[in-house]
Length: 99
Image (cartoon, rainbow, N blue to C red):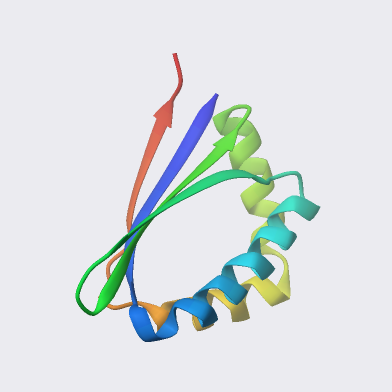
């Protein structure tokens, strides 16, 4: 199994907005075969730290799904809205495999 991890901080004041964006993006990913994900959050003083873990059958499957998702016009708009919710303009990404 292939796992993609994202870590970032969002503004506390934008948490509800972020949830709506995230839910809309999940629907698009599900449409193209994605959908297994888990999220973690930790509240700070002015921000919420988010860690998302997205699970795929393989890296090949991940690349296929993300290629299809990237062609969706709505996802680009959602991504720009997501960037506006960030507390810091830093997103960390890592890739893992299960054993």
